[in-house]
Length: 212
Length: 212
Image 1 (cartoon, rainbow over the protein chains, first blue to last red):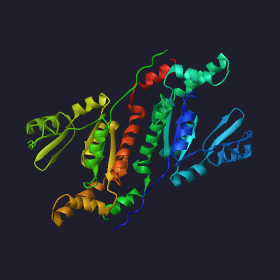
Image 2 (image 1 turned 120 degrees about the vertical axis):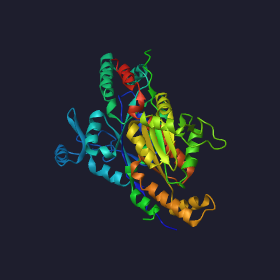
Image 3 (image 1 turned 90 degrees about the horizontal axis):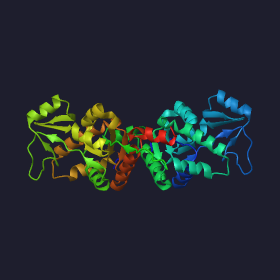
Image 4 (image 1 turned 120 degrees about the horizontal axis):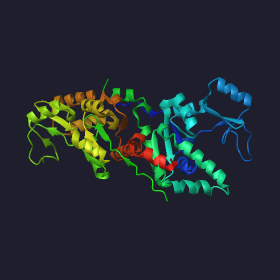
């Protein structure tokens, strides 16, 4: 009995983006619960930890100096300034996860996704989640807190801006039903894992099958 | 309540190729049984019908003259001569199915797949099915009939030739288990149906969500 070379897979980077109010956070949480091959990407940030936040789990808390050195050394897959704080995704842990056949989930906006695409297109699978209706989007944006009409209007404008980038994503999931959306994204993961280029060692496997 | 524009999907062409002995025929049959959105592609051929074969179901039986006219008029998505007979996939019925949101399954070899890719890359999703081991491949090729060692050796050589083209396919499924392979291909279909470019009307849907 011939023993064939082992095929293992390279992990992938799964990006979920959506306007807030589309249900993405719930979907992401369920994906992490259901599929142990997925890990959430942990960002680095220069802001101070909030009560209860754990370094290395919620964020990597780093100094402003370190942040700028990491940017200069191209150690971030994507990074951005948000008001007075800096955020970034360190390349090292993501690369280690992918090489080990783990998938990494990113909850980032269209700007972060564009940077990831520039730095790691080959490993990237991007999914844009849309709300099923205007009424549902408004209901979720309103339902969040007792906010003024002005704040809600600002959120709607931001959601509209985010949605204008849907064409930059590989897959579009309309979130009519959370259960179905999670199943859709699990199918996307299952399929992407079967892509030719993610199956490391396949060339040797086929050669052995052919008796080369 | 705003009624959003309807999104419907354009169908896709699913190609399954494999060396004979990899279990592709069983997989294809189960896919057709399980998913009513998939129809099998019906080829045209110049050979005579065999007992029990129904025109339009098993093949479109056509004359040699008609075949050559269809080739000249580019009415085939792919075509080939096999010994003294001609075979081809008429473009019209496939195009109608895709426009109607149906998927079309093709059981063709690497040469047919290359022609499909030239003529309809955008609609094509190609899956290469591999046997799990040399022993399994040999067992299946031998188990087919009481054939001579020479005939089996020829089949093995043909299987080896077919397998050398695995790199030309989008997805690779190693058929360790039929049930799992069918589930893998259903996941591939589910994912491909969610690809941005297959969702017709999404642009209007997003515009309406954004209140444009």
